[in-house]
Image (cartoon, rainbow over all chains, first blue to last red):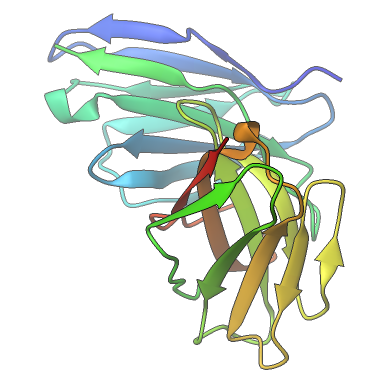
Length: 113
Length: 110
């Protein structure tokens, strides 16, 4: 079974630009969660989507948004990029049933110059 | 979700058992203990989870104290590939949100 895939793996942007990251979950998984990892703040939860609806959201500004499509693939968007948005962005998918684990993708490394 | 406390770093000799402790003294009755690990620059990997009873799978064993205020993750025969940051997470088992702390950097030495 194929794992969680994320594209692109690496991205360089400049301040003020916007970026869209993509995540394809494991087949059959309906829940997709996004996390940001930085050296200073560690791993932080951004949001979770289930059946095309956002059902949980972390403490991030509105510049961070996401969506999920009917095939469970998800995208996250960051507008008006800031230097502090440089991070590893991780996507995780799960069956969203009690007791099941989350499977993480390899991440997208975003560098904002 | 309950707060967890883990040592910042630990060392282990290759082939020996690695015992990683986690304190979660404020855990609630409906909260599970989860363990994930993250090898450098990769996505976190699920290891094991439990509620009250000890659990074992092909990767590790999880020992939870009777009062559930602490737990230990045991890697029975550590290898160099087990060098990673290990995260202990306590959460209600609904939804998919994980709250990561700083974890324990385990270094397995040859």
